[in-house]
Image (cartoon, rainbow, N blue to C red; front, side):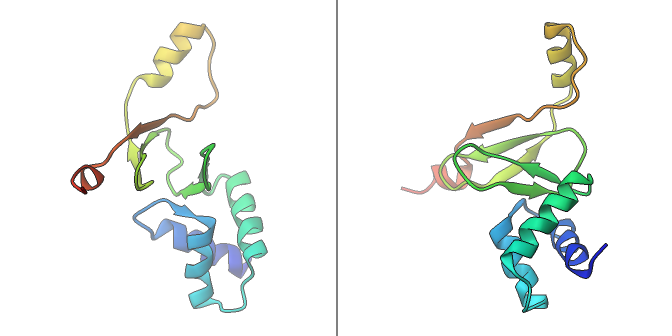
Amino acid sequence: MTTQRKLILDIINNSHEHLTAEKIYFSAKSVMPGIAMATVYNSLKYLTDNKYIRRVGFNDGADFYDKSLMPHEHIVCDKCGSISDFMEGGIRETIEKEIGKEITGYELNVHYICDKCKNVS
C-alpha cells in the first residue's frame, strides 16, 4: 500500500466521525503538504474497492467514508448534516423474507433532526 493510501486509511480509522473527501484532504495535507486532491480521491476509490473502508453516498451531497464494514445503517440530521451509525438488527432478514431472495447488501439512511439542531432557534 502506498504511503498516501496508508495515511488516508489512518485518518479514517482514527476519526470519530464519518469524513468527506474534503475533510480527509485537509487532514492529509497537514501531514503531507504535497498531497493532491486527486490523490485523495484515487486513494478513496482504491480503499473502497478493496474493502478497507465503506463509501456512504447521499443523493444531495458529498459522499462520506466509514471505517466500519459491518452491516449497519446511518441516521442523518437534515439540518446540520451530521451522520451517526445506527445498528438495527433484523432489517436484512426482513428484506430477504419480503422479496424471497438473498440480498448482497443494502444502504439505509434514516433522516431526522438532531437534538442540537432542535434546540437552536
